[in-house]
Amino acid sequence: MTSTLLIIQIILAVAITITVLLQKSSSIGLGAYSGSNESIFGAKGPTGFLSKATFTLAFLFIVNTLTLGYLYTTSNTSSVTDSIIPANNQVVPTVPAEKTKNLPKAPTPPANK
Image (cartoon, rainbow, N blue to C red; front, top):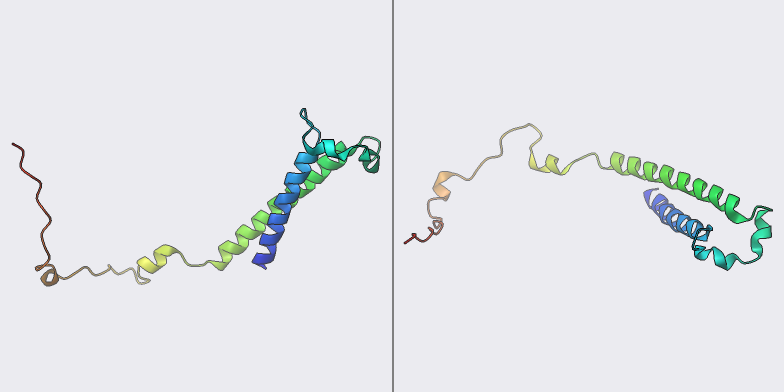
């Protein structure tokens, strides 16, 4: 389920990018490639259609993002700290003193002259 929604998320991201680039702006963007096909979208041209399509795609993108976040959160019930801190809240044992006797000492810094 999650992989399907992730693929839909990628498709929605690409579709939003394309619809935003097709919209008419001060520098025209990719809308220059639409040419005389504006009659397909109605008398007002593609501006109304593209803005509604952008809004719809953005809404679907946000809903899909929230759904993915919910599914990922519910599938991961454990945390990284659960593996560090024991379940019964006991203190993690340290290294016994007899095992640290034979370890080399840290070097001392040189004396200032």
